[in-house]
Length: 81
Image (cartoon, rainbow, N blue to C red; front, top):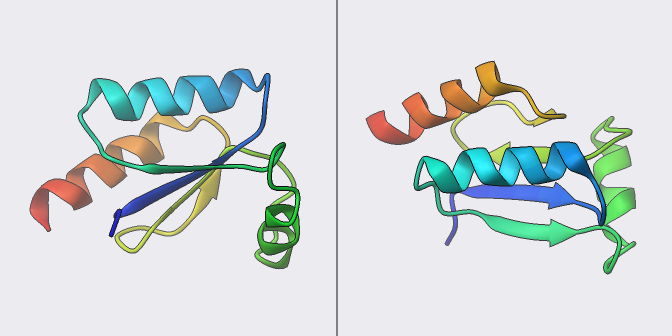
């Protein structure tokens, strides 16, 4: 089971930056695209998110947007797990 899930949509620059950051740091993640799976939007809205990317992990609180500080917290949490 993947430890990180990234919710994205097509043509989203913040999504691309988030995925690139994770790939560059060898973080395995599952991508769930809301453009091809619009039913995911309801899941995100129930959690209070209005925009993608949304990064979910059991190790840190979920967050949206390209946030290098939170991505670095995720890296640290994954490395200590």
